[in-house]
Image 1: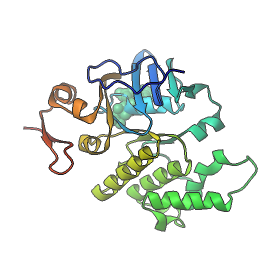
Image 2 (image 1 turned 30 degrees about the vertical axis):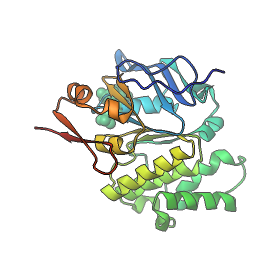
Image 3 (image 1 turned 30 degrees about the horizontal axis):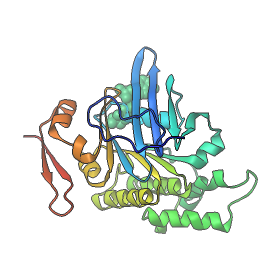
Image 4 (image 1 turned 180 degrees about the vertical axis):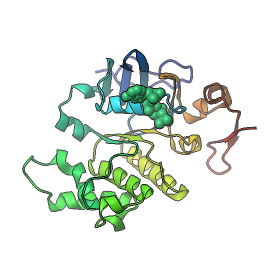
Length: 277
Ligand SMILES: Nc1ncnc2c1ncn2[C@@H]1O[C@H](COP(=O)(O)OP(=O)(O)OP(=O)(O)O)[C@@H](O)[C@H]1O
């Protein structure tokens, strides 16, 4: 099979090349409810070994697209490939070994300890009747440590703060040990140190070859941590490419309707955005 890295484009409609890429490839994905088109023929890629930020104003379709990619919602049409394999055609168990999904404000009313909640991520890796092995528990504890919440292992899930809960959801996804990770606003509810820590975890996963696609509202987090950015507006991709090509006033101002200035970070050289007059 022919493979290529995705083109770096900031020209609007699409960055899909028509060839299979290492990583996630989304082609013509559409999802509507009634007569309302929510995701409108989306083409985009998220390269393997990179963190891709999915950005866009409220209601632009980020969560819906992620839910379709995670097969939580079935698209009206379109294809979703990961490393050339059709994700939507996979059975549940194989898909759960392929992709983990951290939903926005995921349900937490399960009467579980934090460790047991993270161990749910191990289910796709063991036989149906087997319990948790010591190796599963070790992976779950390691995932909690990577998410920075090892000390919460024995707490009841329902007693956690919003930020603690969010990090436990990230840990559950890490424990799933999948080559594709989809996250919807994983930095929601987190203080700035915890936000940066989560982005560092995602960058390390990408360095290990994982395909990471994460919805983000904070464009400076995207600027600082994403290798690739996909900008949605009204259910369509309006720009895709490197942070330096997408996070620019010419692209952002018409979409967000606010003035934007771009500085250069004095230490990293990455873009820093300032909004408003
Ligand atoms: N089941 C549904 N029924 C009706 N409208 C829906 C449904 N799901 C999504 N929408 C609408 O689709 C649009 C896109 O929603 P979505 O949650 O995907 O956007 P988003 O970019 O994630 O927004 P936010 O940044 O506010 O989280 C919104 O206008 C939303 O109201």
